Length: 189
Ligand SMILES: C[S@@+](CC[C@H](N)C(=O)[O-])C[C@H]1O[C@@H](n2cnc3c(N)ncnc32)[C@H](O)[C@@H]1O
Image 1: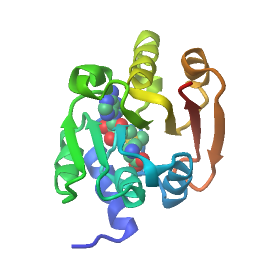
Image 2: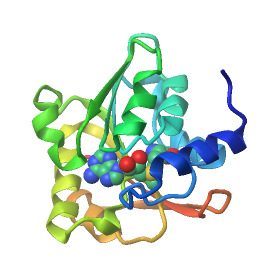
Image 3: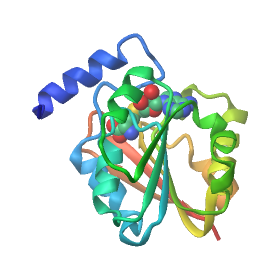
Image 4: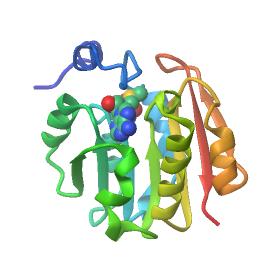
């Protein structure tokens, strides 16, 4: 069954009801996911890791740009979204129910191999040391030259954390999202 975009928004809202860690009233818009995809050389990426895929809107946008032998691993903490993600029939996708804070525990074999790590988790609800630890783990996963993108953020809270770990950051703003959102990108040297 194909849902209209308004049905998708209602379904997202329903699944996020009572879970403040979703921290969004709607999944990313196509404008934001296109902006996200433009940050990464997805056609040549072999491994992309996503933290906080929600119902899979960003995951599907990324997979659509990746090659047939690529692999995407997503880590999501909301069980209802995990159930949605497990319905995506794409052999390139691995869904893990868990939290971004355990990234290294979940994927020890990926250390140094990811072409990109993307994250839309609500960093504002994490303690400072957790924010720092998630950014450090993402960096550890990346190969040299790999890309880290934080998106669907309602503030620039994470800029100093990303700068501290990666050096220079690139920032963009997408007004056509609910709510309008920042994207922060950095590259592992
Ligand atoms: C703002 S929504 C974005 C969802 C989707 N990526 C999108 O673009 O529409 C944030 C998602 O991160 C998940 N999340 C929050 N904290 C998390 C954590 N510590 N680890 C993994 N997922 C988390 C939430 O359950 C939610 O699905």
